[in-house]
View 1 (cartoon, rainbow, N blue to C red):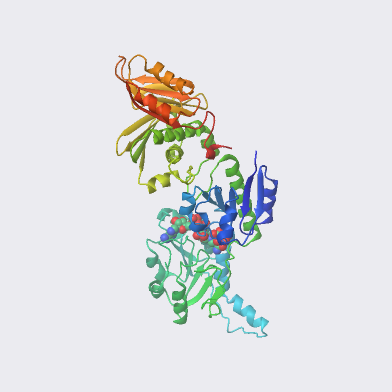
View 2: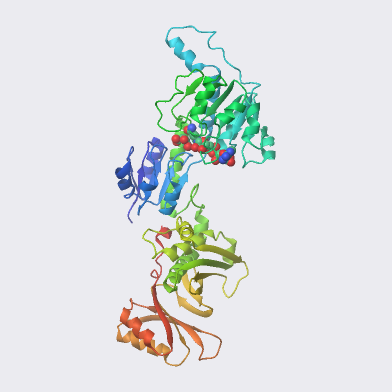
Length: 544
Ligand code: NAD
Ligand code: MLT
C-alpha cells in the first residue's frame, strides 16, 4: 500500500518529527516558509499538513486542491486557515486545543506582573548603567481587580492564577453560565461595557471574530478607570491599537502588554517604546512543554485521521470517532450508493432531500450518513471531490435543503434508510439496507418493494407488468452483448398488469443503442443506467 504523505509547514518540535519518522505508512517532509504558487503546488503533493501560525492557508491557496485531506494546526487559533475554503475543498481542519493553555495563561500573568513592576525598562536602565529606584515605582496586583473577557481554557487558567495572587476577578463570556463563573470565584457580567469601569487590569482570551474585533476601542477606553492596564495574549485586533496609543498618550491607560498584533509579524508599531508598554513577539505558547505537547498531539491527530478516518478536534466538521465510523461503515456505504443512485435516476434539478433512518441504526450518530448521502448525490455533478467534510456545505451552497427523520421502530429490516429527493419535476424515493456486515441492498424504489444489489452498473426501468418484459429486455441486451448478472422486480399490489419496476445488474456498461432499444419496447415506460461503485468498493474517504 502506498504511504500517506505529510507536509510540515512551520517549525515543529523535534518530538513531533520523531513521531512522524516512526509512524507506519507515513512519509513526511518539512517545508517551511512557503507562499503563493510554491505553497499551492506543494500542498497538492501531500495527503496531510501540519502547521502553526506562520503559514497562511487562504482560499486562493486551497482552491482546487485535489489531494490534501487534512490540516492540523499545532496550537489553538486557526485564523491563518480559511476554514470555509478548506471545507469546500473537502479538507478537515483540526487543532490541538489544550497543549498550550497553561503556557499562554502563564504568559498573560507574566506580562501583567512584569508590566506592573516595570521589569523590562528597569532591566534596560541597569544595562545602560543607571540605578533608577524611584523611576520604576510599581503597582501591586494583590487587592486589584482583573477583568477577563473570554472564560475558556486560557481565560479560566488566568482567573485561577489571578485569584491565587489575591486579585478580585470579574469576567464576561456569553457562553459561560453565571452560576459556573461564580463557582469558580469569578464575578460574572452581562456585557463588557458594564465590567470595564470597575477594573484595574483587563485581559482578553477570545478568538478574533466579527464580535471581538475592536472589542476595546476608544469608546471603551473612555469608560475605564484612569490608570487601567491592558494585556492581550489572544489575538491582535481585539484591542484597537490606535485606541491604545491614544489612551496611553492621554494617560488614561497606564500600561499595555501585548503578545499579539493586528498584523504579524510586527516589527514596527507606534506602541513600541512608549512608556508603560511591554511587548513580546507572539510567545504565549513558546515553551518547550507547550511546543512538545502541541507537536505530539498534532502528529497523533493527523496520523490517526490518515490511518483510520477518525476526526478529533475538528474546527470545520463534526467529529467522527473510530467506533462510530466502524459501526456505521456499512450504512455509510449504503447512504453514498443511494445518493449516486438518486442522482442517476432524477429528472430535473434537485430542490430538497429528506432522509429517514429506521430501526437500530437510529441509536448511532446518523449525521455522518447525511454527509455520505450528499457526497454520493453530488459525486458526478461537481468538478471537485466531494466527501464527508464538504458534502453538506456543497448541498447548502446549491440551495438544496436536507432534512432528516428518525424512527427507532424496525420495519421489515433491523435498520434501513430511505432517501427522498424532490426535483422540479418529480419526487423519487429509495430505501436501502445492509445485508450481513457489508452487502448494500436496494429494498424499495418509488414505493415498490424489491431486492436489488446496489453495486456495479444498474439498469432501472419502469414498465407495465405484462408477460415477456424480462425476456424481451434480456433478448435486447443479448443482441448487444451485455450480460445480466442479477435481476429484481417489484410491482404495485399482487395483481399482474399494473405498474412495475425492474432493476438489472449488468456485467458491463450498456451502449446508448442498447438502452434506446430497451426504451422502444412495448410496455417499457422508462429506462436509465446508473453506475455505482463495484461490490466491496468503498468511497475513497472510507478506505483505510
Ligand atoms: P477557548 O475556545 O477555550 O476559549 C475562548 C472563549 O472565548 C470561549 O469560552 C468563548 O465562549 C469565548 N468567547 C467567544 N466569543 C466571545 C465574545 N464575543 N465575548 C466574550 N467571550 C467570547 O480558547 P482558548 O484555548 O482559551 O484560547 C483563547 C485564544 O487565545 C484563542 O483565540 C487563541 O488563538 C489564543 N491563543 C494565543 C496564544 C499565544 O501564543 N498568544 C496561545 C494559545 C492561544
Ligand atoms: C495558538 O493559537 O495556539 C497560538 O497563537 C500559539 C501559536 O502560534 O502556535
